[in-house]
Image (cartoon, rainbow, N blue to C red; front, side, top):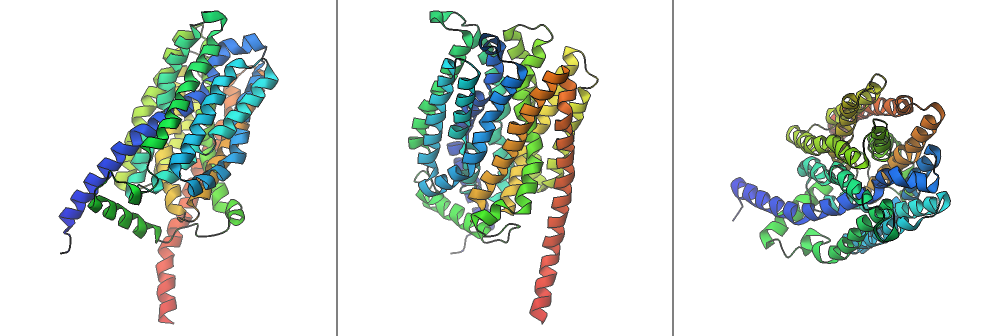
Length: 445
């Protein structure tokens, strides 16, 4: 007997609710730890830089090396996830980065810090694009904007929780003869190892293997996803080498690099910026949490708006323009309140952009190019945004002593990204509109 639309709707609601509650809370917690372990060097620098004799330029280089190794390992890691399955590969990623993050407590100077940051980037590479790929195995396109935004709330959430937590851990200074920044790295690295082990028991590779779904739910979900994989995409099947040279991949990476750079730069440098107002380490952690708290809420609402309207281009471009405006505000801010407003604008834009953008990217990639394509966009964007721009900020700040001037290249990158996503999206819409006419003409002949 055929299933009515009402029945299908009921199955859809129950299936997606069960998938969301099964996967998202655990993945959010894992990603929260990833962001804490990646960015806690910013809070650690409040003690570590003095102890190790690190200049702003040296610290900027050390921070950026994470993204260099991340760039080289991200695509191979995602291809390995596609081959070995998310359950095993995400567990591997988390266990290795947890040990390396904890081991950063034992660095002795600039060179050993360089090595540990490089290894941390290589270990963590593949987690974020791997989860994005994993979610395409489970989420129909209509759910990806809000679900990706909910998953990525871990980024501002990590800083909202991590900044005060790191401030408290720094206050453990002197325990058992160790400095506060030693405890920070150790106690924030161990949970990643434990959650990595938990991945082996919590995650399921594919919907057809999900015994926690009913037969009807598995059938509905696999049918819906199979139907979507058959649709025409902007970037179809091609070799890995050709994909990595595809102009759309590079443009998408440039678009995303502005938001990536904004988040990475603020994570690494905001604590030192706030320190110039004479705040204690604990006060810095509390104040630094405010913009991340706002961003955590607004990015979910923005992702929901994008899914509800089905609009991705303007939802992406508007957030990039908000980042640029916030960064330019730094030129005229001199008070703590104005600085918090500036940081809030930048971080709300940086994190609200992610849901609509990645939903847009996933619909432009075919199922055969999704693994490498998602990783390539993320890797290139992180290299430009995190590897280059974080280092540029440190170099300009070192030379001029002005954080406002150091932020100008980032403002220009975000403004350019907003224009690119609007132009690229318009061309894609025009192509999609013209395609049926072309096919009809071919059939007529």
